[in-house]
Every structure is written in C-alpha cells, then in structure tokens.
Image (tube, rainbow, N blue to C red):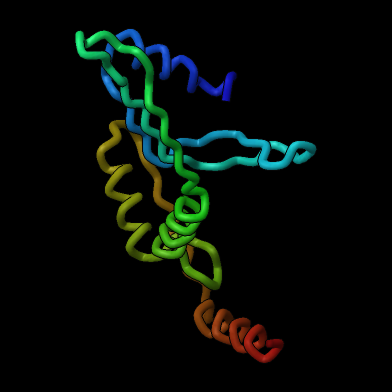
Length: 133
C-alpha cells in the first residue's frame, strides 16, 4: 500500500479533516506471506476522529475487499456490450461508440464489412461448439 498513494490520502485527511471515501479502488496486495502481488479492489474509508476540542486525534480506517464484485461487474458490462460468439461489439455498443465519434471534430472513416452468409457460418460454429459439450 505504501507506494500506491494510500498514505498520501491518509495524510490529506489528517491535514484537512475531510474524510475520504473510495469505491472499488485498485490496489496491489500480497495475500500470502510468500505469495505474489495480486490486483484487488477495495472500498476504503478514512474518517478523522476528533477530541472534544475538535483537534484530530486519529483516523478511523475501514477497508473492504470488493474484488469479486468488481470483477463480476466488469464481466457483466463486457457481456452487455459484446457478441458472445465473436467477441465483437454488439449493435447497441456499436451505436454508442459511433455517437462518441460523431462528437469528435476532424475527418472520420467508417468501414462496413458485410460477409456473405456470415450469420449462417456463425450458427454452424455455435452448433459445433454445442455438440462438443
């Protein structure tokens, strides 16, 4: 955590008295003493604790590992935007990306490739895959 910016956030909370709340923050953690660093995601709260005079006397820290939830959300997001058979953008995501490009000034080009019988080819591939399982 030292070289990942979290102590600086802690110092900022102590200096300003403003709490810090982070959701699904990326962090490299070594879960086992002799294990490798793993990419994880945490929800994190730094809440200043004050004495009766209002002086900050400490900081309450709470962290919660949300790696599984984050990875599942990423997978659902990918599935919502891509065709499961080809991995290409689906119609909705293609339209979304097209709208983004329309807002950019400068020349653009759109290549539309229509393969004859592509749909029937993909149906055949899907059927072959299904027969394997």
